[in-house]
Image 1: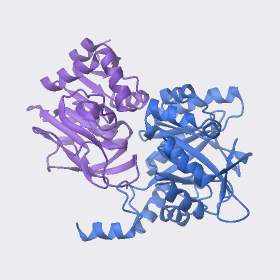
Image 2: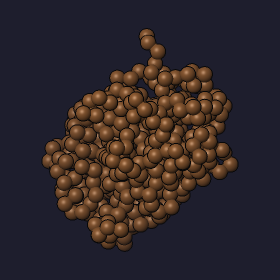
Image 3: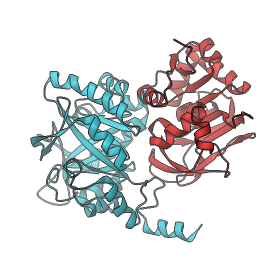
Image 4: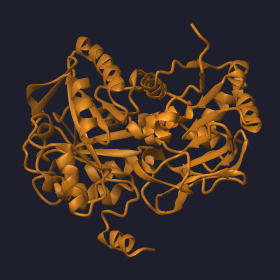
Length: 214
Length: 268
């Protein structure tokens, strides 16, 4: 078998079946690992996430995956984070103030302040910040009570509103040739966002670029 | 703020930030979809994966699977059904029925569920709500409440064991407690209305949505577009249907257009 193009960080989080189903739809055979070296060397890496910030960070630390992920983002190696995976790459979260995050993204994660029922559960409109954004307008599925307000310096974001505006994505370190952001963090779940989410994943994997550029 | 946005805010029900979710519910027994009337008289309605794929194509926002197996043998088939639905759809799946422990929940999540709903076990062991929330996050934990209207006053009793056992608990109090224990959502079924086609128990939806402070899925009795709209207007964050969808009396796409026409934001 050829080497996996996508390596998924084993976080002990339980929704791997949905992520794997998305991979299958995209024709990607991922490898799931808790080995930091394997994750660091991967062509593309994915940090999924459901669960609580503190517990999930504890798991990442005990396996050393936190350091591998931090290094990947710092060096601009293609890395995708989903939901809690996006949040764990940040500095801290109000969900578990005593537990530091990976710190590769200079943002703090805070609870939604808009006064709407929490968690935010369901489909919300994605509004890219620029016309040419990698992430396109559409409906994405969210399940979160915490969010990043805005991207750090050097990164772009697609925005969304839930009682207040927040960063639906953080995108950065764009590959000049392919225009694909090597770092793509999604607060929503692309694996649960229907054909729109699948399209985003395929384009990030470099599997659908040409067909959709025309 | 644009004029359109201001109007949406004034309308109240469409200012939630997320689109109204339409959730078809598939009752599963022995790996097949069945739909009962008032929790009895089951009629076979098809393959779970096939039906789920049809609903996703029609615009369903989420799939609810309810395992109503009575025997251990039947229960084993539920895991397979969850896995096959997971392959068939790329929208969220919630699974309920027979979950008594964190381990039960984990098996279903590993099979492909995104969220789990607990009912009788939560009443018997409320701590299970907190344990599931700590392990999987609040967004993963749905508490299903089967409520029966009391003869007098505007009050409902929580029923368990598929609606067969009264608990003496007030549904509004219980919903509030579920939220404080770590439930991320309430799946609220009116036992009086379930399978009758008479529409949701709107007073019940209003009472629980006002008390719970977490999203509420209205369930039980909705078959016509206006029933679903009533549920939305009563404060539900999602509206669930079963029989009318399974029997092809109401297409989800048509329902969404109807709601959209009535200024409810839906994902079209």
